[in-house]
Length: 202
Image (tube, rainbow, N blue to C red):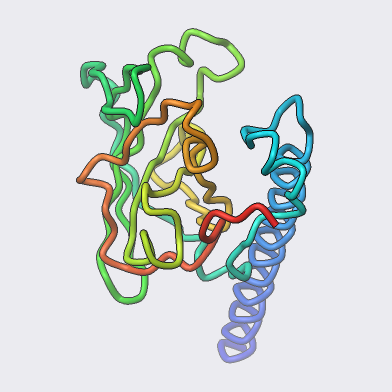
C-alpha cells in the first residue's frame, strides 16, 4: 500500500507540473499576441510612423516553462521612494518593494521588485510591481538597455516570475520616450532566453 501511495503522489505531482507548464505556455502565447496587436495599433504603438508601417511581429525567444521560476520573496515596503535614473528627462520615483531570490541554470539569482509612486496612487495599478533586469543576453541577443517584467504584489512568501513575458522598454523603439534604466543590482548572472529578443520592426 505504501508503494501504491508513493506512485499516486508522484503521478499527482507530475500532473500538477504539467498543468502549470501548460498554463505558462498559454499565458505566454496570449502575451505575445497582445503585445504584437498593441504595436500594430497606431493609437497604442510606441513605434515611429515609418517603423509602424513595416512592423509585423516581435522577434521572441521560444516559449519555455523553464523560464517561469518560483522565487522566494522578502517584502520591503517601508523603503523610501527615490528617483530612478532614466534614458530621458522624465524621471519617476520608485521604492524597493520586495526582494526575489531563486535559482536558474544552477546559479543563485536575486532581483529587486519596485513600486512606482505615481502608479501606486491609481487604484487600477495599486498592486503592480515593476521588475527591470539585464542578463547575459543583454546587448547580444536581447536589447542593450535591458528588459522589463510586470508583476503583482504577492499574497504569500513566493512569487512566480515568468520571463517569457519580458518586454523591451518603449525607448528601445523611439527616442520620444524616457524609460527607467535597469539598476545595477538587477543584473542577472545567467542567460534569460525568454521574452522579446533584439529590437526588430519586421
